[in-house]
Image (cartoon, rainbow, N blue to C red):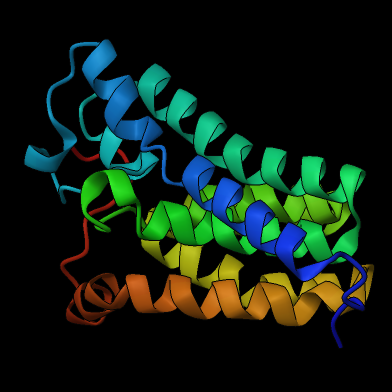
Length: 202
């Protein structure tokens, strides 16, 4: 079940473009360069997300990356929701998420979307988002694999939304969760092989 489309289609199209461009901003790359940590594309996995920023040894940079990557998704949802409605909020969230995964500024080679996904969830439903964050944290603390925490929490997010609400956002979250799993295909291979990099390893 999805929210009814109440916003005019041209308006939704403009919201989609604006949210995509916001989501495309590669904050991890920008923060790493500002803080003199080098080019993330040449560090660790080459990913622009917080986990790879952490491999530079800067916890501050990693925290800021999480904050800004989550924030761009959350801001897109909140603004669209306040100005237009639930349908616009979900379109904005999805397009911000796609912008992070496929940023126009980086030739459509972006991150894996976990922090942005969590920011979107919190903006849609604070408690469902909080439960998803706690799921990520629990798996990360127990197993010390960021990728495993991302996979489990992404899978749990639609269930949390269905239970806590709004239930009509569960399918929306499922689409993003599936994309997160696709983006983690190499991590899944390494997890199965037993050679995935643990959290905190440079």
